[in-house]
Length: 223
Ligand SMILES: *[C@@H]1O[C@H](CO)[C@@H](O)[C@H](O)[C@H]1NC(C)=O
Image (cartoon, rainbow, N blue to C red; front, side, top):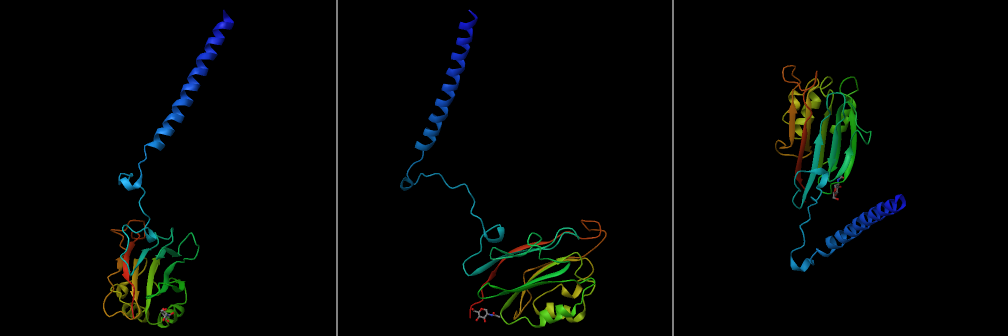
């Protein structure tokens, strides 16, 4: 009696497992057969969203370069500079620094020419003046602040950034947030700039304003 009960139980378990295996393979099969040929026009739409360059919310038109610039968050998280899907500077790449992070990109080819960060709190800003003065014609200039872009800021540097199309370089100060894309031979103000003043009444973090993030499409320079 006992033995036959055990056998019955085993038979039941076996039947359940077999049913489960059968259903599983059957469902796999039906999933496969449900696909219709593409030419019927009934193929399921790709749900996967196509990745844009630099993770932009929408892709750039032809003959435009995609960019995304984020300032640092307080003195904790470093800034990022992305151009045409190339992460030029970022905390992950470990090539950012407190102060101003700047990359020069050829406005017609999109190729990176130079990148550097400049300590604007205790650093020697003569290096930044030299860097800005020596920017060749036709270069795009990407800038992101981190922690403090303002302490060592002087009139000469403000003027050089203003000449690159900046509207806010004149008021850049201690612990302000700033992201900017300008150009060497720009004729007007750059539309690509965001600025947040360090203000204890409105600061998001204790001692710093919120980080800034700016994305956009900049027209390729054609000669
Ligand atoms: C930028 O690219 C153009 C086209 O290839 C080239 O003629 C020019 O010399 C480049 N500029 C710099 C500064 O590399």
